[in-house]
Image (cartoon, rainbow, N blue to C red):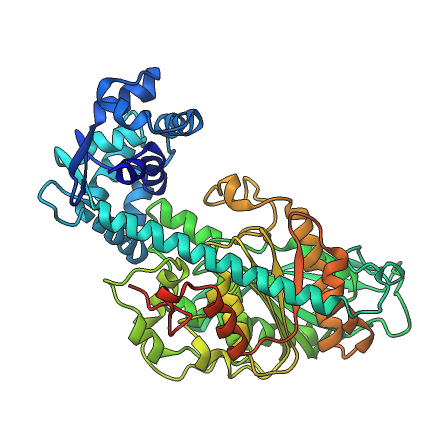
Length: 565
């Protein structure tokens, strides 16, 4: 009983409320066999939120919480989420939103112990439309039932499973870091005497903006081109790029735009690379702004096809313009093309490199009743709605790719990723909860068959650490500071250096840059708390051994990618 009461303490209650912006109606009911049912009134929570008073009903839980937990809970109860009813409605009626609410409904049941899907969606919309706005207490008041029943047993199971998964992830990351450090110890390179690739290069550059129109697909593609210029520039040596310049294409992530990687485009241009940064109109920031305003539908499954086709069309148009536009004439080398993408853009460049959509795996693992701690599967499974056929997405002009926080474990899978036959660098953040590193980057790294492959692992980086600072002009969904991660400038510097080293080595065939891709260089430039590690090899067998060693004997898994439940 004592252990049960500890679980019923405010720490767990706070976890539930933080994870879901509201629980129930007049009373919140916890049923935990064999001890029976416990409940808490919404009035008690409201009194505590408004005046800080702990009444008799609430004291049972508050006495088991620390002062810090109580303060955090009160802050949460007082917080107003500035979301319009239109936005809430659009999201919760979208395919991915419905899946999320459906899974939440398994934990938060109605008074008759039914899935709380419809009640949760209704209360979210009603609370957002109310004059008091969307707060936890107001959401509870709008719940269309006198009592919400928390599936406490299932909740504890989920918390335990998540804790185990996070522990395994930390142990895998620590094991890979240990291996990288061991490899770095054998290096004899003195990087303090080498050029610092984190600093800008010697080239000046000009920015040219275009809007391309693919009439056949009704897609308008805004593009910014960063073009090196030899005028007033100081090339580093006689082997430095000269016109025509090697070309790098950058693909942004979901709900982002071409401003996201300005820092990376400018840095590459300063080293003599022409850089084309485009926007994908079906999944960019503008589309999401229209979607949340009720003016457009959510991104379609066809975006999995249209995104790589956008890049192919961009390259076709640049080849045409290079012959007709004086500002581009003779400036772009289409024999040396690389691609960089982040998140959904990471998927995009992987397909351009030859990875094919894995419809068989999507069919097996994507099910509306399944759930997973891998949030990216909600997006990946949208691809299962595409007509099943062999889509030709590979572009032979592209010779090397970098994929930052890519999503690929289901939509491409081992069968898709293993088809890539070119140099690849995968970049992972250890605290990425949207594209979890173990399933979306570390394990897929083992599927790559080309010997020139690299895994850059950034400790404590999140899914958003690599993107540029949001601005009022380009920010769609405000990202909570906790999800941005610490010191993003350090992450920018890592990506600047690694992108130059990788493209110089594998796009321009300059072996003198290969040393920058070694684990010892990662150790040299690492900055706490965002330590950088680089691995150049990891087999499926080695990964499975690491994964198995991190799992208690009673909970061994035959498949390192848990099947979504």
